[in-house]
Image (cartoon, rainbow, N blue to C red; front, side, top):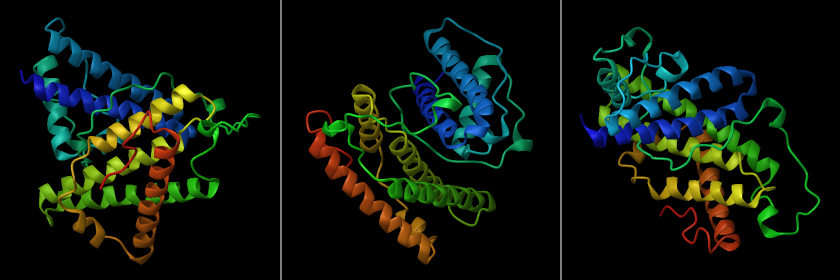
Length: 266
């Protein structure tokens, strides 16, 4: 049994819990599916803990949710098979619904404390907004821009999954583009979820953002991604990078003792 591989799978799944909790906010109409999927992923995490400790052998079925499977890269799909073999001694039959997905090596250090209810997906006002930590880092227009950029990046993930499957581009190149594009999507999700009414939660989310950025490997095939952008997408990419620089400066200014390195990636 490869403990290092299991820990890597566990880290990815913890990140997926955060991602799908974010999706509840972005797509509240799909809340029930996301909640069920989060439960399945959490079950996998518990099974991995049992395997690592040598105290558990389960016969849980693999996750076969189409939305989940279609977002797995070649490497991640192999990891799912490996996990199932360790748990049950059988290889899951998922090929019929697989289209592939993205490679995500980032280990997220925390699971969301609670999954927001549909009633909580609303904007709230607070009378006391004088303290720096309660002043939003960006505007509603910025939020709309981030959602547009996220949709664009999601389409690029789909594009490079298709290219990887078709064999028209090197698998390594496609996996790299998919990986760093998915990280950008996660950063956007976390930015859109920042809660300015709770200092502790805000600081925790900002630390998660910084941990993700600091855990990133530099893209090896960034030019391949850039070459896939049309004129309007290229403008969005420029705006995104400018926005991240702006947020970086604001975070450094407001939270120097918490996140001294902020979101700088250069």
